[in-house]
Image 1 (tube, rainbow, N blue to C red):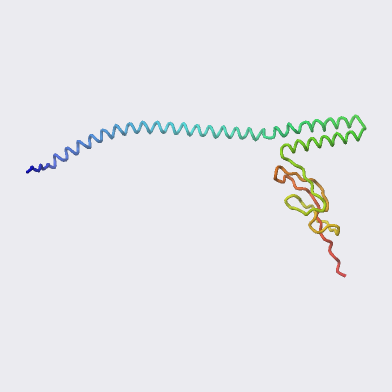
Image 2 (tube, rainbow, N blue to C red):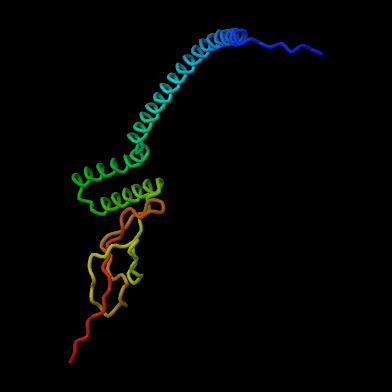
Length: 184
């Protein structure tokens, strides 16, 4: 039979104590290594945060720059029309030829409308007799009439403009209203 060795409480304590000390040493070394690693990760996080902040600032500057000069191409297209209108005014002062002045202004208007269409701005006009559409028309007043049914456009005061598929300015119109019949 084997003899069962009994451990004395002192012996057990000493061996546990030495194991814990050994673990503590390893843990302390590991702790220092983890501290160093933590420091490196914190530095990286700070660098990345700074980088992100710099990117945000750069994007903000870029956006501001874009917004500031977004209409540059539009204005480049409009400049020839302005030049033509200035020439028309100069010619009108020097000459009494009203017909050529009108032709010049009409051509300038055509060029101006063409330049605007390049960027999606389209002129539209309401037609007399069409249904009043609150999305495309703005009623200045109701006009009593028997010529047109109620709710129809009877007069156009100003053309409307649409930028791509959005109404920028509705056409200004008068809308038909049935005359009230007098009671006899």
